Length: 529
Length: 57
Image (cartoon, rainbow over all chains, first blue to last red; front, side, top):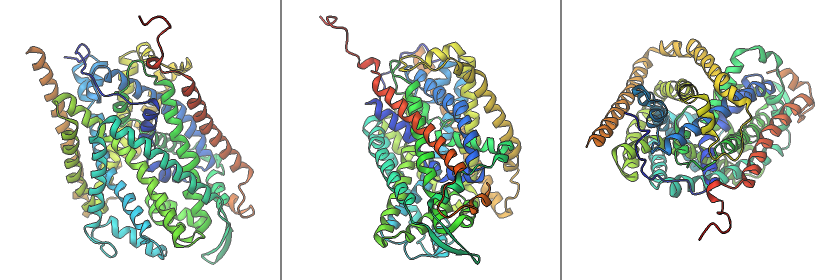
């Protein structure tokens, strides 16, 4: 049975167009805009990284944005707020709904560990406000961070502190989603996004107006300022263009930053009506995210770190990972800002506050597909569904807190938060463009459109985007998926934890497949009755 | 990336190459954002359009 001919129950709708765009942009703007992007640019050719980055944006990012809005709205007007129902409506095949499980599985899995990382930003906002990160040197700041993320290392923080901030983060997230679309998610976006942009702009202005600083690193004295940081980030390395890894890194960054292939954009788009524009709104959403990433994210962490630690110091920080950059180096930068403890506290609150808002506007979107699925297929109320999912997230999140340093989170991040995104993107592109039909897809995108997409994009959406996705999937399978599956280089003591992590993921996937089966059985029974 | 190019310039200097790449990147994203918001503000959502005069009895 398909849902195409069923009568859709009235669904909630977005209160305003600006609310929709801010919520969609909030979904896309996340921690990666401020922590992952600058590292990727530095590691992959500096200025030349922007060439494959923008090509991937035009050939994969924008088309997928339209496809996901189109899939979402098509399902939404038929009463389906999650990908099982959306795929079922687009493709009259019993398999379609089961393929849609990807759009339930990924957001739920990512939501759980994302909330844990989001809870760090809440904790560091508190630590910054109370001056706990002040007066620490590099080693002290690193110990402060490691003690928090590793429960076995209780040298600085109490055992229960990470649990407390995680519970608070879960509570705030699910309180927002339990209030519904307009009173919860849209309101959060309307408040959170302006605050995020305000904090980011203030910090960028402060960083770019810093005076040059003279430091001695390994016996060499150098003087550098924020412009050196921008130069470090944007100086082109033309050889990088010939390296396929750079192209894949750029395409991967576009994926992560736009939150495509997750299932959450489709869920948000399902609350649009047939008369709503999605061509121009999709571009506005993507452009808002790119501004946050390229203009603000690119002008914050790297210029600040280069100013106070030099290029060599920034390279070392970049090698340490995005979290070292955000949670160790940036508080050290704030401690060195002219103006004393008050300025350091203010800058810390703004930096971690903006990361928190970037995180929460994304995490609430990840909860939406599962909530919509349960509400629509099992008749649960919004509040009941939200707090039930909160309980699940809380219980499974505890596993992340306990086994964080033993690779539990890395498994989820790789299979659901990285590899899975490309699979869902490819599946939805094939279903929407090839099975539903290029002409039908094109017409669907232009229902209520405020702007006509240039004709050549039909060719890009039909052939170039799927080809790009296939190349990415094959490359990632060979380069990363197979070694990750085989646990190459994983310490022996972490292997059981990683298998347990995979076991939990498989259990979630099977449970969701069972729910889909049950939901469709209920629909069939309802029709016969 | 080429860190020697960074070291060869005076302190706190952006350099022409880096400036060009940064400027093009900023113009692209800011241009796209302002263009799309401007066009959105000028377009009237279909369901918010008023009915033609005289069509309401």
